[in-house]
View 1 (spheres, rainbow, N blue to C red):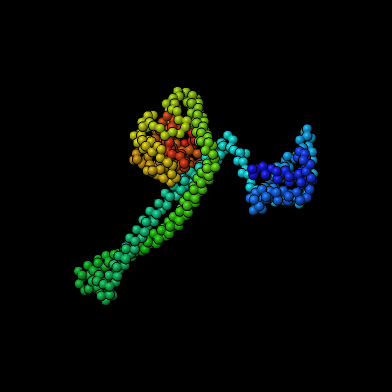
View 2 (spheres, rainbow, N blue to C red; view 1 turned 120 degrees about the horizontal axis):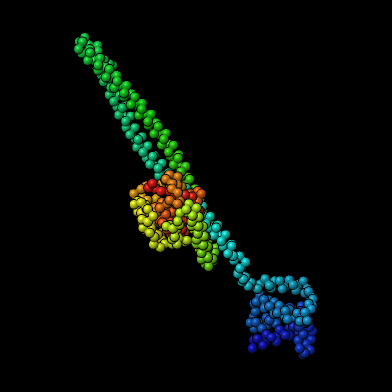
Length: 455
């Protein structure tokens, strides 16, 4: 009923813009704003329809604008492909329409699909994320080195403090002895007892006194020398302690700077990952695996070529399927000539599979790359440097073709990553933040060299 009334009133309003109704069919060839005041008439009609006279003027204006827009659309001539220009409405009518349009709620914008990642752009994201994590891992090595240095410097400061206290005690003892000698001389009239014996008329006592004077002079000289040395040592301890404190403070600043860089790079990488859709993150993981597989395949092929060039038969540790990360079972480390300690180190490392990466961590719940290798070898009874860079610098090096389970493979030009070789062309390693301790192809990353802790 309400709809019918609305249709009648709107039709009448439209006809009123054209003059008296002729009773014939309504013509829609002209826009409704040809005659001034038509919009006002239409608004009045809609006010009567909506709410029985008690109206909200804003709602009526919106409704009127909606109807006018619809009528304008119908008024476009449907001639055979020839566009017909319609007269422009008066400027006052355009202003009214613009004002009404501002009152209408905006339709939600369609999702922007223009930025959807292509395969190439997603691979670039992968490279960027890997670069950020590489920087974080490099900073982790700097952090670990600074932490190790800070611990050493703190221990030296503690030792210096202990030696300083001992030196102060020694000086006090020497001063007490010197004071006792001075008091004895005072009681003897300013001369020590030995000197008084020298002045005696008894030859026997004179000779004894001379000997005792010599002994006393030597004791006094030794006392003064000991006191001087103790005071000098105490001064040196104080200077060394001051230098160590300054070095410790500088080390702490480097450690804090590295820590800040680590958190920033990890946050930046995680931010890039969060911006990806779920399916893109899944594809990103696939791209990581594919890149590792390709690198491993290239490495295996290069080893085959080298062996062929040397006249050797390929086989042994290049036959395993280690083209991607895994947390499956690994060998016990006794194949391919692993040493007893090397086998123990491999066994420890393999027991950590599935545990998360944690920068600066040495277990037992999480590890970074060098934390895993250093703890593995510690379990085998051998202490090695804490960081991958120091492991590369200090441990004995072996040729890649001669490596055996338990050896450590150092990666990247800056020696920022390390994994433990377990045979079959595989390593156990703690890859990076967001990943777990896993098995990977030994050639899945750029190899810098190999070191053997028990060589």
